[in-house]
Image 1 (cartoon, helix red, strand yellow):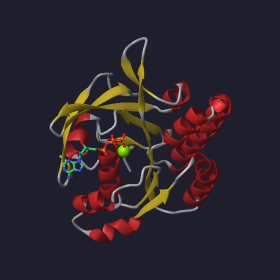
Image 2 (cartoon, helix red, strand yellow; image 1 turned 180 degrees about the horizontal axis):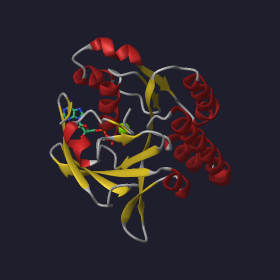
Image 3 (tube, rainbow, N blue to C red; image 1 turned 90 degrees about the vertical axis):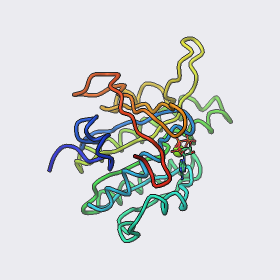
Image 4 (spheres, rainbow, N blue to C red; image 1 turned 45 degrees about the vertical axis):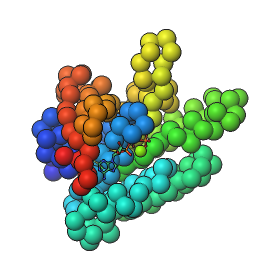
Length: 222
Ligand code: ATP
Ligand code: MG
């Protein structure tokens, strides 16, 4: 077994040396509509031809988009969705989901789209919980990192961005914990009319700022 899992898109695989690394967390962040969900959903559907894929979803993945991306519905029996609707549900469910995952055979990929969204919402409602929510987020990221390591699978965490007012640049939310624990970090940029770029922000064997172009199309990504 190689240490990479294909993204499902040969041109992206070529650009990032074979795909997503097994045994580590990969973080993917970008603006709303940049294509984060398209990318991870496409990789999940393609990977489900090889084994089980766990997709933890806080957004409500579009079933219409899944059918646009699939030609053969049978592979989808390998794609397991877990929907998380609130911060409390995330706190309670993630450890249970991860326990279940550890008891499963033939898991090839775990995706979490989007790891931080309920944390962000919870903090906006109750700012005094900032420290507590940071700690619970770190705990969840550590659990996910352990899964990546112990099961030797890629764990992909999708993240949102905020505008850093001092630098006027978009930054991933969730503080520095995730960017330290994630061993690969990619940013997706919109180039307009369906065109997108995956930019290497951090990687163990690729220079930063490597750029890989792809497009969001009717059938998925190309
Ligand atoms: P968010 O942060 O809001 O979750 P995201 O980064 O996950 O956003 P996606 O949902 O992956 O973004 O991508 C949305 C983009 O996908 C939109 O620009 C939309 O136009 C494009 N898209 C969705 N379906 C199709 C389709 N059938 N054909 C072409 N483009 C599509
Ligand atoms: Mg999304």
